[in-house]
Image 1 (cartoon, rainbow, N blue to C red):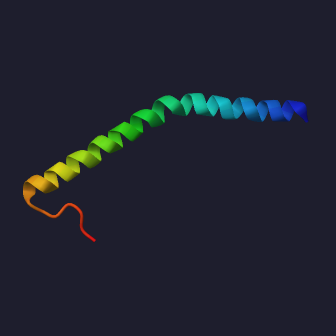
Image 2: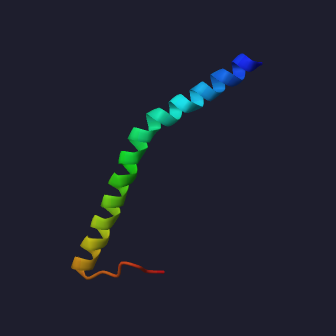
Length: 51
């Protein structure tokens, strides 16, 4: 039972270490894309925030 808990914790730790680098970059890329889209819509004269 203790080995299973240790293996699960190690797997979760490894998953966190691996995704810390990849997801961090992905979030920044998505943020930059969103800002560029808002700027393009502002320059083109379209409404940016519509409901």
